[in-house]
Image (cartoon, protein in one colour):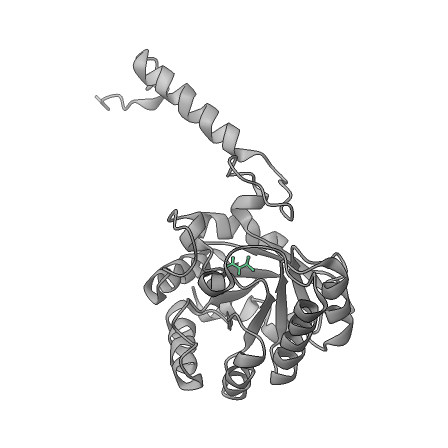
Length: 273
Ligand code: KIV
C-alpha cells in the first residue's frame, strides 16, 4: 500500500464527523480480495478479532494473537483504498496496562498501516483510551457485549435487560466517550439502551445487535454474505446466500473431475508448434 493510497482512506476524524450527518457503513474484512470487494461500499473496514472464529474455526476470540491480527491487517490494507481501516487489539495485548496497550497499538499501526485500533472495555479501559488518543492512536471503543470477556461473563447473550446492566453499559459508553474514542461499537445491547447511548455520547455509535438509531452499523462480512448456514444470530441479516452456492460449485466441480469432463479443451494448453 503506497503512502498516496493510505492518504485517500477516510480518517478516524472523518468518521467521527459523520455523526448527525449520515449513517456510518462498516463491515469486517480479513483478506485482500474481500477487502477489495467491500471497500468501495463502506466507510469503515474492521479487521476484527472475529477472524479467529470466522476463518480459523476457534470457538471464541480469546486465542487470537497479535501475529494473526498483523497478517490479516496487512492483507486488508492491500485491498482497502478508501475506507477507514481499523484493526482489533487482540485479547491480552492491552488489558495489562496503558503502556502495554500503547506498545501493541503502535505495532499494529506501524506493521499494518491501519489508521486506528479497536479495544473492548468500558470504565476500566477509559484511562487507556485517553492515554492512547493523547499519544496519536485513534481508538474505536467497544461496549455492551464484549466477546473477549466470554470466559468471565459466561457467554454470548444480549445485555441491558435489567436496570443494573443497562446502567453499566451507559456508564461504560460515557467513560469511553469522555476518554476520547473517535467512535464506539455498541454490541448486543437492548434497543432502547443503545438508542439512549447514541443520543447521550458525542462520539458516533456503531451498532451490531443494537439499534437502527445508532450512528452506524457493522456486521461480520461472512455473516452478512450468508457463508455460514449452520447458525444465524438474531441480529444478522443475510444479504446473500453464498453457503449453498459454494457447496453447489464444489459438488459440480467434483462431478466433472470424476467424469473427466473438466478440464475441457478450453482449460488446457496446446503446444505452440
Ligand atoms: O471482532 C469483530 O469482528 C468485532 C465486530 C463484530 C464489531 O468486534
